[in-house]
Length: 257
Image (cartoon, rainbow, N blue to C red):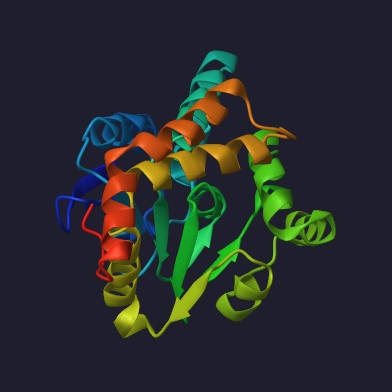
């Protein structure tokens, strides 16, 4: 058994993806890395979907790559390239998912598991959660894009600290470093994450998607809006969502998008 990437729905607007390899703390096998973009693409095509929750099965988020496979995946230059390419595709599929994504972190998010959590828009964790980026313990180097994302999240000095030391970052410290947005008691984590996902899903889906796209351009160094973004911003004033929103505001009721 090499683990699996499972998916399903809480509601028609809120879906979940689950890393399932609990005997190995949800470490991702090569097959799982390859399957993740396929599962994400299928959900991406669902026009009703508004929020995606990413989680691990059982008591862990993910221990990253399955180290027991490393001898095989790094056996030749071709196999090493295939492995790295598969991981990059998985990260990119999550980063470029057009709707808001929430990492629900219970237990450890280590190595590539921490990278997957950082690839999500929002991170919500249990009080027993911990994160670590550990390439220095394995003698490997993480992709430029993943280190850039860590630096953007915690800052240069803290990123150096985490990468050089490969130390465990507990939930309370991770929250101070902006790696976590919310921490809840372990027993309440699923309920609170779903409540937050519902809060997002009740807002304008058009607004959520365009806001995410704008923030992505800012993260990539854009200092002003592209013509495409300007067009989307302006067209929002002629959208169904805007009409619903302002009509609800005038009538002093919650909008239903």
